[in-house]
Structure formats: structure tokens, C-alpha cells
Length: 250
Image 1: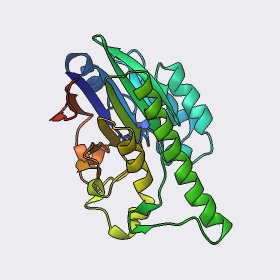
Image 2 (image 1 turned 90 degrees about the vertical axis):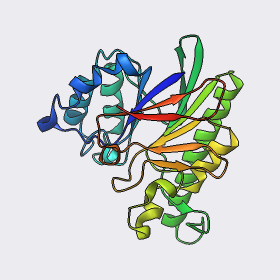
Image 3 (image 1 turned 90 degrees about the horizontal axis):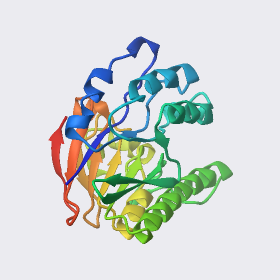
């Protein structure tokens, strides 16, 4: 049984230093890893990233993260990534990593992702260059996720997880104003997850959304934005020989 702890949208800043550390120090008792689903800072500054780094440094489980839109706000995303990686996190953007959990190879593919909307109500790559660039960026994020998940499949990873900030499905956006769904996720991410038969998809971003969802292909999707789960992290259990998860709140 693989125990996946996850949370996103923690939005740390200097005035929240030490807020999550006491809870995260217990992860060794209940989880095999901690996934951070973006928006780790408020404004994407190095100073804020240092606060996150202090929270994760030396934790008893591996930490894998993607950045969110807030983490890009100050155009210091590369510096934010460096700070987190120096603290021991693996930060993914279009790539993947493999963890050995008791002899089981657990592959995690990650990207921030982007918006664009969902089937029947999505943006098209047509018209003004700004709109075409918007859709192309979303397509590139999804293509990177699909390629990374496929690579994990080819490496023989028994468990494969997609980690994003933006949502792959509208299910986990329920509670948000429908008018902003196109800015909260993209069906292209779900296609990447389904095409490569991932076991679980984890995202954040939608503070007013819903925790549980599913792709058209039957992959479980979990919105782990902290305002949604209401805790320092949630834990999902993934049987190695099956593609279902049993959630338990941490």
C-alpha cells in the first residue's frame, strides 16, 4: 500500500513561518511521500520560498512539488525552484521522478499546467496571437505531462501519479463560479492522465472546489488545495496491484 500525502495552495510568507512544520513532522508515521501541488508562496518571491524551504527541510519523507501561478507572479520561478531544491525537494515542470517505496517504484510526473477549459467549452488555437499563445502553452504543459507519464510507464513503475497545479477535470472545481472554470484547468491534462493510465491525479488551485473527482477514463482526481481539504495535508492510499485509492485525511 502506497501512502501519498498531498497539499497545495499553502501560500506561505514570512508571517506564516513554522505554521505547517509541526504537522509535517508527523508524516513519517502516516505517509511515504509529500506532494506539494503549487501555490506554495503568496507572491513568488525568494523570501517566501525560503519560508517554504524551512518547512520542508529534513522531513522524514521525500518531497515532490510543482509550482503554481502565485509562484510565478514575481518572475522568480527559477529562483524559487532553486531554493526549494536546496532544501531537498524535487520540483517538477514537465519532468518526472521515481521513488522507491518498500521495493515498489512510484513514478511522479509533474507540471504546473494551465487553463483553457473543458470539453465543449474550451479555448481554441485561433485568432489573436495572444489567444494562440495561451492555448499553445496549455497544450505544451499537457504534452510534457503525457510524455513524462509514458516514460514512467516504460520504466516499469508500478504506481504512477500526475501532479499538477491546474485541474484536469471540472468535477473538482464544483463550488467555484462556472465562469472562471477555463482559468482553473484544462481537459488536455486529463487526456494526458488517461492516455498513460495513471493511478492518481493530484492538483490544487481551486480554493472553493471539491476534493473528489474522476477523469473520463476512470482515474481518481483529488483537489488538495488546503482550503478544500482543511488540513495540513490529506493522505491517499494506493494499492500497488489496483488502481483505486482509499482517502484518509491527515
